[in-house]
Image 1 (cartoon, rainbow, N blue to C red):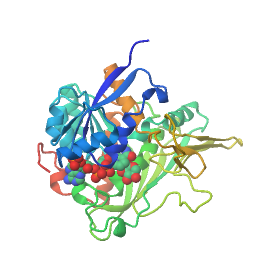
Image 2: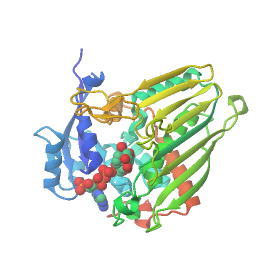
Image 3: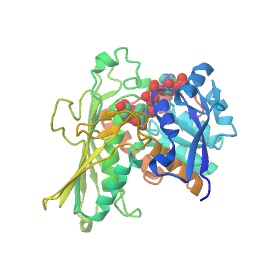
Length: 401
Ligand SMILES: NC(=O)C1=CN([C@@H]2O[C@H](COP(=O)(O)OP(=O)(O)OC[C@H]3O[C@@H](n4cnc5c(N)ncnc54)[C@H](OP(=O)(O)O)[C@@H]3O)[C@@H](O)[C@H]2O)C=CC1
Ligand SMILES: O=C1OC[C@@H](O)[C@H](O)[C@H]1O
């Protein structure tokens, strides 16, 4: 057996998700059956200080040789970095990713990919021009559970797909949790709001079910009807957004299919006190449906319910070395024992496989679809009259943010 190819990562920004992602990255891939690649962290950069980058590297357990930078540009210039993971707020993705691509670096960029579709298109063009790999870090697409859902859809067991309903929320009291309005969830300067942060997951499942299953040559973008309520203290970010999508399909494929995609920073999808929490995702066909629990961004339980009486429930625990008892979802399934990771390694593996195979985009969320989902969010914001400050909507590059 040949030795695994080592993927050398650079981590751009050191906030909350950078820590989770990088810890997951460093979980031994053989614990999830991956033997062809290994991940290592060769450097991290913090725009705040070198000591922040140093403590980040210690905290995530990076090799002692990993370099700490106090500038993103220095990280981008590091010749030992194969791929850069971008973990800045939404507002910064376009500028950060463009800097990386211009320098010929491969990129895995956190969701949402950019602030708007035009920025996304320009990144895709630059990646093509430079021959770089580029992928939106929509981790959910790479879960084994997502592979199972794709399998159920292609098996035909649900019959003709008719409708998808998805709901993705974080239950907060925003006035309390985000009191000063500076938090990235509500700050318009950082492209905050429910839609870009969480709505992107609500759109994930309709696209996976109703777009990816159609022939590439003939599939068409959905029509969008949107309603949006703004976060009251500032009215500069959306608090609750609802999208009704119509996916055009030929009569022979069952005619148009519908999706209702909802998101809110105030509401809860599965109230902890509810003994029978509702599904956050329902993919419905003429012969039955598949339901996912508890949340659309990180579902850990599936239920297939067919009209013939079949009910198949499955837990989707996060794998790994396994220590401690970790968290449990509402069904009593262990979803994350301490040290097992949070499921962010599957997207990292996909990026690693792509680098080995010479692919330039992710397998289960290609760049054309990433851009299209940004277009749907643009249209939703247009109907909801939500525009962010010009300096973060702009396609000008470089712009100092
Ligand atoms: N996949 C998932 O499950 C999740 C994804 N995310 C996504 O990850 C990204 C980052 O989110 P998260 O880690 O929660 O955010 P944080 O605010 O915790 O971290 C963002 C980091 O970006 C850097 N940064 C650079 N400029 C700014 C600025 N002007 N304001 C704030 N931070 C800045 C900072 O790092 P430094 O000082 O080191 O430069 C900061 O620590 C977002 O795109 C978000 O949607 C977030 C949570 C979960
Ligand atoms: O991507 C995300 O998923 C988990 C949420 O809690 C977080 O707010 C969001 O950014």
